Image (cartoon, rainbow, N blue to C red; front, side, top):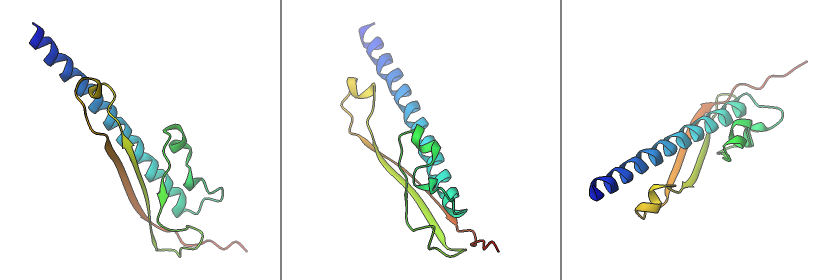
Length: 115
């Protein structure tokens, strides 16, 4: 019973931690996608440096160019690279922290000149 219970606890802790990791990965993916989209449409409030979705997830994306100076058709890439520490599994088995990485690239929209 002791061996089976210990194995089951570690298995359940691993499943929970992996689920949380995947949830954070989806948050990071959505964050960079939102940041890149706001950059390519040249958001006036410059929310692409800290989009609302990213604030709620405590994520800060980086852009590989300045949307104000890029020409239409140029590619811009948004990236996130944050460390991820295991929550419950690390209490049972020492686990190294992992890097949670997400990136996306989009093509800049042309500049609109209003007369």
